[in-house]
Image (cartoon, rainbow over all chains, first blue to last red; front, side, top):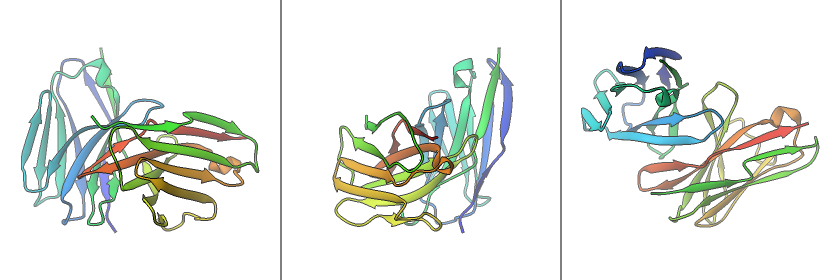
Length: 110
Length: 113
């Protein structure tokens, strides 16, 4: 079945860039998403990318998609302490379900 | 933007009772809503897909008689945890689908004593 994998933890210094990586297995995915979850809260959609795109930029966020390697990354420029959260990547499968990765906990140190 | 609400945001109940959680899309109509369960420090596990006016589709391993889902209108889906037990304690999150995006509710934390 489909599988989405992420590294579990990332620690960066405030002001640096953060790069969160994700790999997926379903080559028929049409959309890939990045969500942010703060403690005790639901998921906030950060950005998404259509599978025929290589890159999408939205303010401090840059999404890179390597479809050949089934690799997705999220780069956060000028990371702030408020960016500390868990970040989930997800792919939409052919039945419009979202398959989530395990989440990457980002810790931003002052 | 699209807003999804859940009610209640948290609930504590005794073992053996039933709990109903509501999921509403506030400013859009959603023919499809999804129910997820999230254990501490873990990812979201899809429980079921709820389509307005029809029976929900449950994922493998999810007991449909235990987790009753009703999608009576284009803006409301409910999840009822029947005869709740401590192992049902979890964070339940719904989402509503619009175009190719899913918008998530804030979640409901259920604690069963």
